[in-house]
Image (cartoon, rainbow, N blue to C red):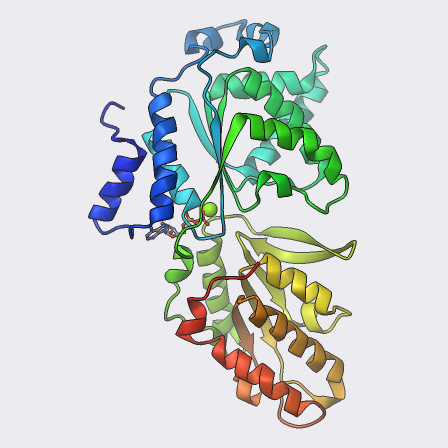
Length: 380
Ligand SMILES: Nc1ncnc2c1ncn2[C@@H]1O[C@H](COP(=O)(O)OP(=O)(O)O)[C@@H](O)[C@H]1O
Ligand SMILES: [Mg+2]
């Protein structure tokens, strides 16, 4: 471990080696992470012998709370920013460099599943102790440094579990570093019971410094430069191309269903990961969705993939109108669109009501395929 050169040193070395581009905002974040790296050299608040033999659980459970965390207990970091700005890359650099014996890095979604599984086990064991305390104690025994990728709170049920769990972790001097697309104050914003999350948000802000990363651009998207955005016809090859684009942009994140709030309703996004959403044409344009829904999608996701846009017919003008509204929303928010379709944009809608209106859609779709558009920042 003594060969570690720190976060800033490693970040600079990667730039020297041509593996990364220099980015002033990332450099500032690397400096903050470097300061924490320094403070954590050899960090071991409760030495491993305490936790490795019988009785460790009892000892951890009996340990007094917050007031017993060591005086030099350092704040963690909450790294927030848009997708592709290098949050995970920086946190991983930090994690690799960290000279902490007990350390753990995990995708937050996976961590949450693990917590639910542990809760289930503890409940079944029917011990005469507070289950959240048992779980916090065992997690703290395994790691004095916890790094979470893509921290988020899906619903208030999880929020309440997390509140108790994190209180238990912080009282055991566990240092938390997290990446997220959502600032703490916006966690669960607009969701059911979001006001109940306030104490947890305050707890997070007490123990984690919030660091906003505004890198020069979306570096992940850069890797797709020169890749086609419109695939016609919508055959198997097109589907595979969109699969690859999704996997590339998701960057290892696990695809799942996301729920957006639209005027107090839920809008289900069936496949989403790391700022990318994927829909069938029919899901978007053959159902009663409107501009509010499309606006929610366009502001929430920097990238949208649409499978199977058919040739549009005047007899189905509802679909045409929705598609026009959808493209307007995506375009106005600089969303990057990848699609498979029966035809190139210019041959999608040839005759009938609204062909004049469709000219603007066509021109927007064409612009959205350009290199220049690809470099524009998403407007959330
Ligand atoms: N300064 C940079 N120069 C070149 N590539 C970068 C830079 N910063 C990040 N990347 C790359 O861009 C991609 C996205 O970075 P990542 O850390 O996953 O973003 P985030 O977690 O913010 O979504 C990764 O492949 C990463 O290695
Ligand atoms: Mg990431």
